[in-house]
Image (tube, one colour):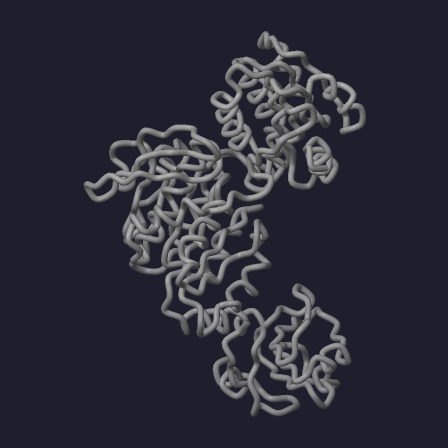
Length: 463
């Protein structure tokens, strides 16, 4: 909910001209017309020159405020409960409003990017802070640039901190979102490979992720994974703020050691400011420890005591479909990792299986990885090689792209039984006889594959 703003003050800010209606009232919501749904009364909306306006819809939600650079003749069709302000340039008015609104609040704003771990790190930060802070955060993994405007205007007078993840489909996306959020703290969790169709190649992808460096407010803080090879390629020479490194590397400012798989999560030690702390985080995998370190670094930077933050992490609830463990058919263990699919997250999942799957019959069900552009075959084959190095009972691939995983695994001499399917039809016939108390099945597919998500659910005992 927008902090209430007087229409008169908005007109003065944007140096606009009143075409119709009153300016003696306040707006409490803001949208970009036709990009966001108009659902509330007292809404401000930016309407571009090319948009056709449904004046009745706008008036029904009145009082409404329309800001546009359309010709006056078109704007005079407004109805009685709609105020219209004409501006010279809608783009300039939009950015001026955003900058003004963002700078009404002197609060910590965290922006997170990375190939993997964005949503989890964001949710951890939110969980740690929410006990006694009012936190505005992006919802789930909905991080595309067009969401940034409503997320920013969701900050109001009660908000004490904000944490947003930055979606990246193409070069320029992160720069755009940082211009809106003006983060005081930026985090890069990992840089693997993803969205190569939008960024050209790995170098282009690293460059696109690096946009966060210049996007942080002056005197802000950058929190980086010290152990990530590609993050080491991010140019930092222009950054004038504070840098905090996290990882297992001795040189990290906040470091984890003695990482162990335990019941329902990870035990580890945190080293920070010459002190040691015992820590636990629900959810399996070394990558989960890295997410926790990034979250701890961020909340400590906001002034929270590190030992208090560590204790709050123990009650963090791991996200659905993020290496989510369930009891499956025949007493098997099902690991549902259908939230996202890219080479980095596949490798992280395989590392979890290296520990969890010892002495078990490990079954992999792997789907297509999308948005790899011209590098599709290369990265699917690399996963096939990773699979071949491991003691896997059965490999099942679903989809035409994932078939390359199967082909390469066989080429590299895997001992697994290998099957390839175009879709989920017929997969259950192969799986059913194998699902017993010795079976651990990992299912991993793209977020867009509803069939793989529902197939994963059908394997679980409760369904």
